[in-house]
Image (tube, rainbow, N blue to C red; front, side):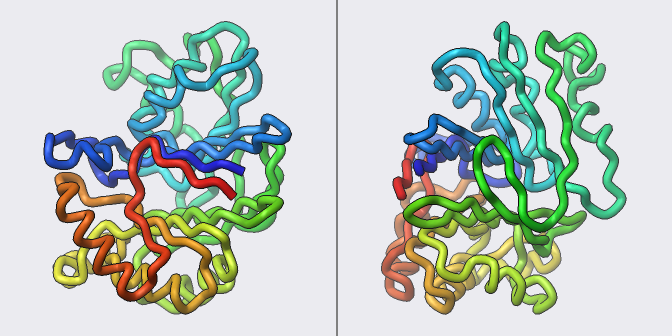
Length: 268
């Protein structure tokens, strides 16, 4: 199984020269099974724009699994190449959250937000609603649990032959009702991709925003038998120099820590 990062920032794709090393696009992951050829995409932030042209092979179904509906996780979807290339069948798997409305996904295609309405897309994506629990999507076995984030969000665990990947972005530690199930869910994962939007110094001013700091992430990984930790959802404008310093500080607590970068691949 291979995981590739196409977008690693949170909130907004604010590109500055000092941050370009890690990348400035918002969340998007591609997971592929190199034995079966199956692939699945998680989140449709601005990173999905770069992913589309790199997906080769014959036209086929393309599952896109959303963690939630905040703009930074959806904003790239209308620009996905497979919505317009003949023969492709994009599929959106959208979580059922409190007060959800399936029309939220379609809204981003509507005027005045986008010039091509949903009903005029060459390849209109199907929208499938999903809930926490076991799932089978695009040839992958996965499961989902709720996260502590305004409006709700889901974390996903993808089963691999040689280890599992857990993708848990947009989570705020501090509520045992979410933290304890997440601990059970992530325990023993070969790779954990976890929200580290803030530093410990910044977090007190951002309580309730639905994000965590790097220290909470590394302590969580150290306590739950995680193989490797990738800090994710970097604050926009966080420079490469700052992220390197965060990585080095994190490795003093949990040596198998990396700061996720666009283009980086994890092989399991």
